[in-house]
Length: 416
Image (tube, rainbow, N blue to C red; front, side):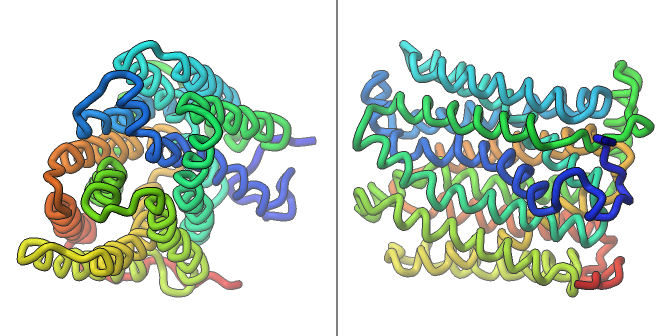
């Protein structure tokens, strides 16, 4: 049987069904969300066990992972364009599993950070190759629709991961969280190995040498549309990472939610999952630009009210949840569409494109989020400022990408 997907192959000729293809891509993306969000309830226990008294410094458990995850994407992209998607992906998952298990036995906080960075390096393969596989198979609004479904599953993980982490802490110590992560990733690796065929055709493979790699980077960075949408996504991701870094302190220290923290975190995360699903249903009709540009203005409106309120007076919990939830709903329309818009003109270098764009988005967003998280001062003001600035900066970059013209459709509506 031919094990190679062709970009123009109809769905019924795929070796696996479209649904399973999306499910595997989503599972690969989900291991990243799991590695971040399942840790949140354990931050205090990890700090106490490894002698980290500064609560803001405990956030480095998240930042170390994001740094490794962002930087290593520059490596996996060109490798995946040369050797295909399967081999590099399985190597990356192997690194992820090994680092997770070793993190469980880390004797010090700094060794734990080293293992978290290595875990992020392995996870980089999952992000790069999942996006590359989607671009290998789909284009235009179909790609945005598939990415929305992938992101919907990806966003479901933050809904359940903190609760799962809390349950694991009830029956075991924090080390069990890392063992659990390794077990889940190993299961996904087995599923991928058994069921997913190679999606990169032989004729689309690129040589692996410094000149070819640099040429691929030049193509990506020289495309105004891709580059500006990648930077805009990095800014929006920066706000999200800022929230993830400081979520436990906000919900426990500011709003005194205690054990209810994972529940409210799940409610807010579900807003992104719901909006990602709606995006998959609407993008074929209204287009990537129509939905994402509308959502960006909605995001800015919600964060403007949020920052004004937070600066004038202490923000009650209901107001924080309402405004932040609105911003997260808009994020579910911004993220997958911005990613699809950035990847669309770069299908001929999908692996390298995915790696460079992922590097800009995740490392840039991770560093911005680390700054926002470390600025936590016992209020929600630093987070509100971070979200507002990310929205306004994202709008400026989108205007540059589109030459000042927003909401301009470039694809015909897709038939259902």
